[in-house]
Amino acid sequence: MNIHNLEKFCDEMEKVAKEFFRVLKKEKYCAILIGDTRRNTMYQPLAFMVMQRFLKVGFDLKEDIIKHQHNCKATGFWVNKSKEANFLLIMHEHLFVFKKNS
Image 1: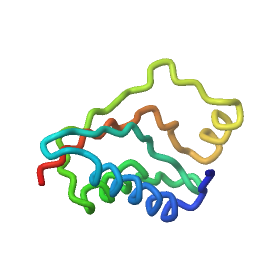
Image 2: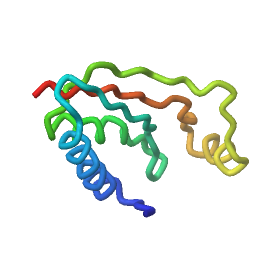
Image 3: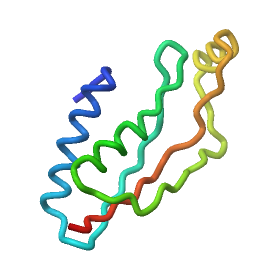
C-alpha cells in the first residue's frame, strides 16, 4: 500500500501499533525504524508523529536511537531541489524502542 497523506499513514501505523501491543507479552519490546520527510520543502517530523501513535496505544518509549546515514546520496533531482529551495537533505532516521509495561 502506498500512502502519500501523512495523517492517513499515521492512522495505518496506529493500527500496526495496536496489533503489536495486542500480541506482545508484558515487559517485552518492539522497535521501528522510521525517517522524516518533506512536503512542499517544509520538514515534516513523520517519525515523531508515528511515535505518538505508539504511545497513544499504550507503549512506553524505552529509547530513541538516531541513525545517521553516512555517505547519504541523493538523486540529482533532490540535490538541485535542495539548493533551489534552500533546505538540507534529511540524513538521519529514528530507531524507536518501545516497551509494553501493562
